[in-house]
Length: 77
Image (cartoon, rainbow, N blue to C red; front, side, top):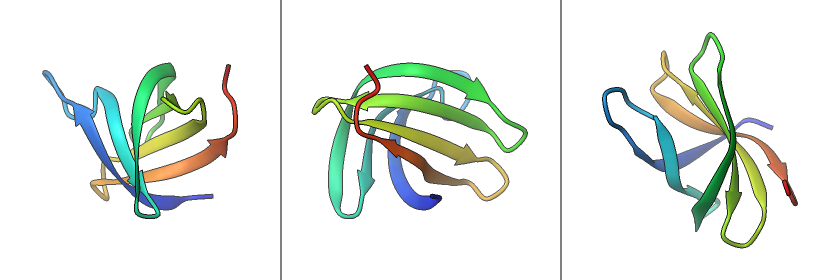
């Protein structure tokens, strides 16, 4: 699954260092924790856990300057 999402993220010395919240299908999710972060040739990826306990993979495509939802996990704990 690769759906576009809007992401609010912390950006220090570079863009997209840590996602804080994202909007998917009209609903805003607050990121409670970043469980894992890695980099692909396209850009940074994050496995995050929301305040509700759901897990999502957020992918930033640097060439397209766009965020995508990679995978929706129900529980990443």
